[in-house]
Image 1 (cartoon, rainbow, N blue to C red):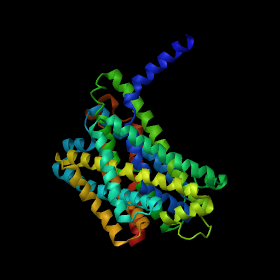
Image 2: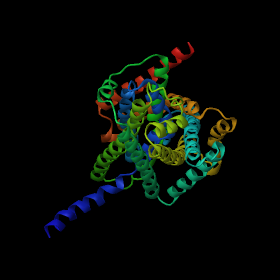
Image 3: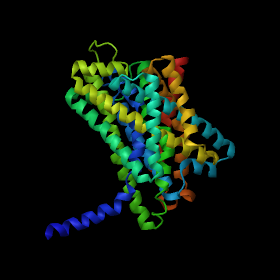
Length: 413
């Protein structure tokens, strides 16, 4: 009887807070997409533990940014693109929409190529055919969203768990150099190449399309959070949701770099700057089970992130210009660049890295309006950002913009 008396309040508490959890796990899949595989493994294989600090910093930035986006949707009942259309001049919203669509194409480039590579590594399926299969599966996953947000969130959360388990398994097998890992927490670069990869890691970690999407995922809960007390509880749960989900994604990213640094940096093993080479390298340095875990994680990432990216594209168009197109048409348009790269035989890992660099240039266009809106009391009322929160968010935006400007100057100057 005592056990039942204790368990009942726990079950009631879980039942009360559970509906608020889930959106961040959909957003988090974008922080563990195939673009992260390319940038993190390339960074670890090339520079060892040097860029650990970039992953940690980018993940902390992502937690702050996604929390602000989730708060905006939960409090206002509207997503970030809708709020931009309501509060910005029409021409500004149109510009933001165009760049957001370009970002969506760069996102799909990474996700489709990643899924195609996984199918090739697992089953020997040619890359173009693998790209088509990835698109079909992602479209089917997105169909779950029409049957209820909870189904979609549960499946995507399950795929994130597959990715996390796969990389924790490989990381435990690979081990880690503790002192080198600690030294990697000190910010430093080793030339323009390391800066390019740092920008790619940032672009792969702080994803502009899920800055828009997270607010759309939480706005569906706004009606249930209309009561002030319920809203405060919902905001607390949303912060916990973001911390848990992005914490899991951060562990995935860190595990990728640690595995590459531990097994491939300075090893003389050829080809470890490509995903195919990493797969072979894991089989050589560990065994076939490690390589299989890598390929399965890559496949789960490609399938899940591709469906999330298409969903974000619909949110962007609907919000910025109050228009929508059939999902099939959107899927065909955004998959085109990835299919062209696969058909012409271009190096997929190089394409993945450059797609993430492009994504990092899209972050300020989502982040600056988000900060501007969440600091306005007429938008969020009592839930407006604390001045310290706004100051930190401004520093984050300034760092991202400065990094991109410096990258352009060093690369093309």
